[in-house]
Image (cartoon, rainbow, N blue to C red; front, top):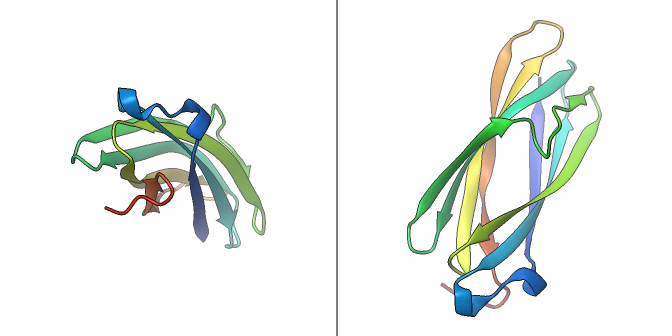
Length: 122
């Protein structure tokens, strides 16, 4: 299984309230199966870190309530969100996939990506 991950993140200004230290972000992830075998995304693990160094771990089945099966040459895209107490942060983690032909599990790393209010330098 050759799984590639692409992430785009953005701030949600209408839900962000800096006076309450509430910074809301959305991220859209595209998971592409560039291999020859079908895979199913079974679970996710996130490590979310804000600019103060506060770390939060999130684990769970699937993504956005689904455990998608991704055929070779296909992609799956979803959007989810995150609330931080700071204007900047990062997310990273992994997906747990099962190869549908061999039933073997594989961890697919999600590269670290930034969550940032536009025009904020830190």
